[in-house]
Length: 442
Figure 1 (spheres, rainbow, N blue to C red):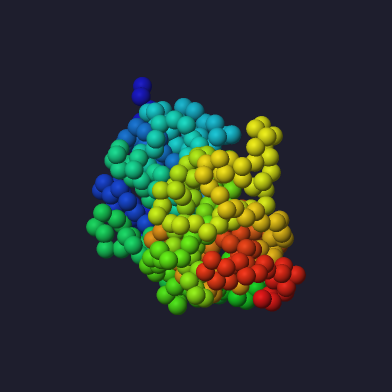
Figure 2: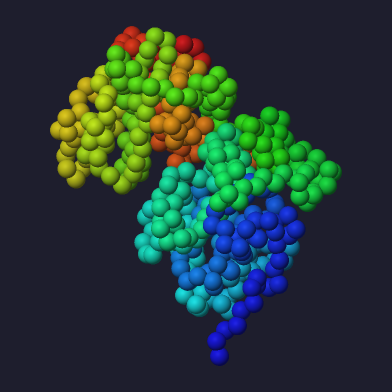
């Protein structure tokens, strides 16, 4: 006899405040943004909706976290504290599965649909059929390029996408939420703790005290406001350049920044090997540092980047490269600097290696003079906003090193620009003294 399934499984029902989102999806809605406070059941709703969708339409479904490494703990192995059961077992009971692959965090149900937990740092490396449904969990921390990759796929096959997250400052999560408000094709909702009534005032006060105890007064309060009040204006906890980028936004220095034909363009690079390469395009006009363009990609060779630079209408002054650009590769015996020369890109400056703290302080000194093109530099601006310290969950302290994620590439490229020490248009007037930079002295 065929297996009979009653949906939702295990008599699960959405909570009262979750029903608007559920109804939108159940009635055929294909796009949704749910900016809901911590512990509001965002992933739980998404998992059960996906389970229903997998029986309605046979296809591939993804649940995407910012990083593949965190996906296992956050979703695959997560336990529902109210039931003591794994969340994936509640959404996809073993009885309805035909295949479970723990190492790949992959499930196939008997009708044929597949579901997999992945990271926004490896979405383009997966093989198999394209997805027809994607949950972007913790979207404000994810690589925003993941949506650019998935969007045309879902548009072509009529698939759906749900974005669930709490704010992380004025980054792509904020612009995503604000940009889709008023669009009839999108469900857009922000639910703060005061909107759901899930917690008492005493419980929220306790949460705030615990955040302050763990993170300190300023960071703890900011994180609490993000997590429970869904405040997009709270500073990103552990952000290196949060105050400087907030000031740029406040001073309206993130705006249209046109190319000035009378000024040459400098490029600053972060070269990836099996990773993203990022390039800033910058002009120096008077005391202004004008960031007019930004380029980032992965999975392509230097030939692609050289072609991109040559097709732009810019006149280049110099290309600023990281210290390892002139290291010869073992396989070819040729350095990437030599490869760029062979592709017609000259006038390079290879920067010396330096301490990460010095690079960060150099960027902090540079940012107050910077103007950013709002459209062309959006990804680079988001990277600078999101570049943050790595958090040690076990010791409850920040490491003295940056978290390496999608934001690292644009931030590291900008650090090469700061290291170059350009102070005026077409002028290399000095090199920065890193013994002074580390002390915050210009």
